[in-house]
Image 1 (cartoon, rainbow, N blue to C red):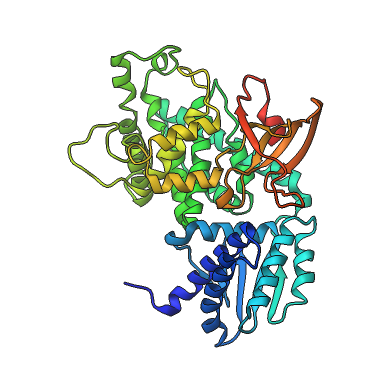
Image 2 (tube, rainbow, N blue to C red):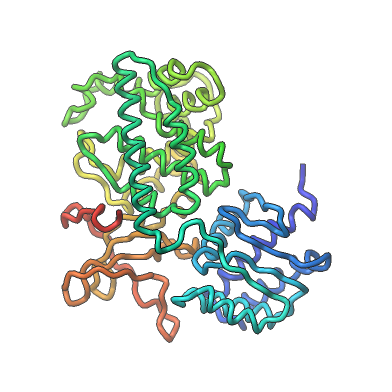
Length: 465
């Protein structure tokens, strides 16, 4: 059923506000592209404020207009996500429009937002400018966790991560020994991680750089869980659905417990017969999940995901099926997370992991065949062209490590970087934002090339966790 104008207005407002800000980040506010974007925004805002003020507020992961939550629109998902990040970056909780705005007032707002981007006190910079703009007031973001709590937040997230690894090991061991398994703790942890994704996505994704060669399967399962939850969050899935997705991702490889260890731990290439056995793990995984949980909506979701995660988008993978099907939403998400983490990990039969950017390049080649092209695009937007953990050489001769993706989907190749070696060759540790510009409007730094942190013996955990 098509949306009414009243239902479309909030989503259109979010989308056009995002477009307008992004355009102003590229061009001067007197540029025709910015002026056109301002006009479109004004046309959308006017009928809303004609009935009273328009209060746009960010609460957790969602925007609210005059107290009513604006649901994610798949059509505008990138712009919605961009605006969430802009609000958070500038500590902006709300913008209230009390009347129709003229072009000059909107230009002043855009100038203030851009100035705040480069300020050490972004909200205060915004507030000072907003005081001089008629018909606009702003409010500060209500944060659950303050910046001063950063070490504590890292500690909590580490604890959650390692608790989840422990639970995967426990579930696998109990299934191997034929003992009864209870998934209550796992389900509770999925709810906790789903909550943490909202406020601490970058920290959680940083945890997925942890790779344990000897316990690859357990760490891989947790990493796939986190990456799947992050992608699901970007797609606008509800907390309940995210929890279901997390559990499905956590158990996606559970069928590997049936694969003989001498095959799973074989250091060389598999024979054809060994591959035939390994390719059975999706089917074994589906049966194992149904045996643990019985038949219910939750178990069916997890079983289907376990069965389908190697089928591929075009159904060319395994297990082979007799008739065409439409892959489950969870399966398409988990397949992307699974491939990314597998390629960037050191495994028994693949000792040298791919650098994150190289893994993404391979995945792009698989778009439309093995991987859902739309979901892959959102995944790349989520982790950036240079994912967390990528070692980069800058044109300033600085060597750095990516620790946070860009907040601007139009500049996903401009992350935040921890500089490890300065231009003189001295070991240092300071952060830079690749979005920073000089007085002439040129970017201060550019990434020249990526390097393999394994060859430089860099311990990612030392810098990212």
